[in-house]
Length: 288
Image (cartoon, rainbow, N blue to C red; front, top):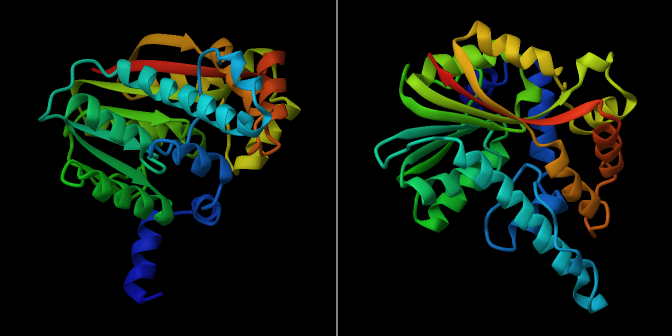
């Protein structure tokens, strides 16, 4: 690694924790869940799903069962991304959007396809950035969808340059006050922020064993629910809608626990959701 490359990485990965998170996603390149599901139609997601699944995927010929389950999981994950994009409001071809923690780019490509707009994604995983940019080239949209090796706490984009910003299960890796300060800076006045996240239920007390297990598995730090609303208020982001998606995501996890690429973390999610120590929220807020 050259001196210039080392310096560039240090500018993005500002703490040992961020280096460890980047290392996790760089070395989990062949995660069978994300790759197997993305291969179905070329949309690679890095988030979970919502909605009831078709129970018929668990019946029928045994030799095609695994394929049916994977296709159904992918449909639920795509439905989650569609639900997020539904909240972005009016977006035109000249608008610019930001996908903060963009993974392999699935939601960014869906946004460009729906709105015909420009989308920039940022990730601290160099592998994810390279993968997503290769996808953009293959799709012929590299002039409108680009991915950058940058820190979502310091995106480098111009102040007021974004019509909308979203985070899809990525906020648990950063300080919320720093994050929302950056989003408030890059959003235009009246711009939209949409957050889908898992958060701990601090009304019920300290985090549960199941939530701690999720933290350990993903090298993350799940925030309590109240921390989101405090950080939003401190940075001029006013919630318009808060939706508890927990009931809608339970079927996804029940099906994933029975899929051929289950990772072992499924039981922790199911336990945390069912005991009420963990919530799956969607927060829609505007920049004032």
